[in-house]
Every structure is written in C-alpha cells, then in structure tokens.
Length: 292
Image (cartoon, rainbow, N blue to C red; front, side, top):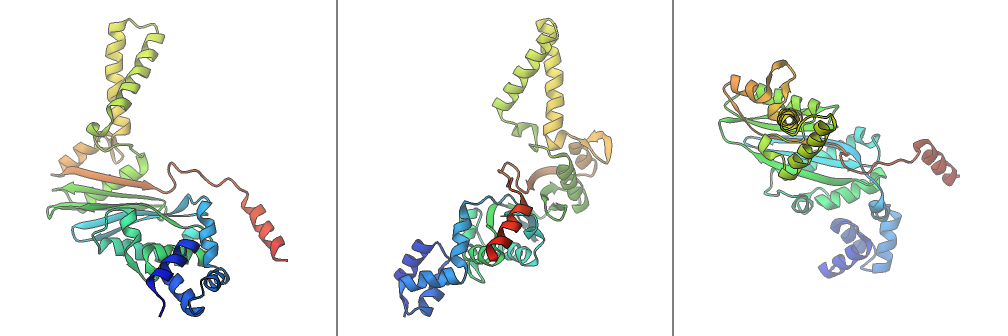
C-alpha cells in the first residue's frame, strides 16, 4: 500500500502529477529513487523541466451551459501544437470541468478532477506527451439572467475569443457585439471602466499637443475636451462606431434592438506575454543532430 505522504514527497521532489507519482511508486514498490527514474524514463520528468520555457501560443475557447459560461486561454510553445487534436481535447476537458464546477480562478481549476487525476495532472501529462510546455493561463466564469443572452465568438479558430452578455436583445445581437470586440480590440467596455490615471495621462498628452500647436490655453482646453471624447470612442467597446453601420455606436445598436450591453470579455492568445524568438528550423536541426 503506497502512503499518501510518500506520494506527496515524490510529487514535491519531481513536480509530477499526483496520479503519475502514485503509478511510479506502485511500479517501483515504494522506492522513491527508483520512482524518480521511472518518471524520467516515461518522459514525465521532462515536462517539469519545460516549466521555465516560454509558452505564448495556444488557443482560447468558450463553453456555455444554460446561464453559465466559461472563457479560457491555454498556452503552448508553438502554433503547431494549437492544431493538435490532443491539445484541443485537453482544452475541452478543462473547459467542461470548470463549467460543471464552482471554480472561478485558475488556481481552483487546477485542483478539479480530470482523466489524469486533477486538471494540473492532466496538463503535466499532456506536456510530457506532446513535448511542449502547456499551461492554463487565465479563465473567467460569466453568468447571466434568464432574460439575457450570451454572444460567443471565436476568431481564427480560437486565437481570439470574445464572450458578451446583452439584456433584452437577441443572441444574434450579442454575437455581433462579440465580433465587433474581436475586430476592433477595445481596451474597455464602458467609459466608466477607463481608469482615472489613464484619462489624466491622455489629457496631459493632448494638452501639451495643443499647446505645442500654438493654441491659447482656453482654445487648447476645448480641443482637449473634443479629443478626449474621440479617445473614449476608440478605446471603449460601447462607444465605438458599429462595424456594420458606422452611423451609430455599439451601444446604440444594442438599444435599437431593445437591449442593453451588460459585459464583454475578450481573450487574445499571448497578448502581453513574451514571445519565443528562437529559430524553429535551427531547433529542428539541432534535435535531428542530437538523435544521431
């Protein structure tokens, strides 16, 4: 009988998943050193070594069940893996596990049960099998009322995912807003969402710009007022010109369809992350040379 404390010790030493550690100890009759070698032989220990590598590719996806939806991003090292059926199946397993649970954070999601033990164990196992660092980067759980509709849209197969909620309007309207967000990359949903310091910094830049144009202070102030409104229309989804009808903004489009925009969540894979800058061809050639 393998004790839980021994499994815990092996997990801490190797970084491997709970189920893998248990299998390793069972296969080696509880010998800790031999169990570590077993993990190495199975390639599972290699997955741990990949933790320091950069994973900024991957896919985002959306899962919906009734009045609850989950949007998440799972990363890989290369774009090749994002086309891998096993990678996609792993994302589906994670997404559905979160959807059926009370988890709302990545940390909570990693502890959920999976086919490999926990979601974290699943990611470690697939990292070992696929050969790249894989990670659950972020997720959001969104709920709606009975008279609301979700709008779910995936662009480029999941390189961008947008989940919107509208009240009163149809699912089609909600999806139109999601497509707008995907295309126009608004940083905020509503004017009220823009942080005060961001607005003040923009005003300062615009004021200096107007003054450098030789405008008097009172004229410069009016120019800044007009330009800051233009700034809001660029960075706020609700105030952007609607891509299907440039004469109205997104908020008006939803209102014209008897609705109100409630929220929008946009994930673009790898945004804000450091990207790999190595030469893939050189990496392949190095692996070929090493295998000879």
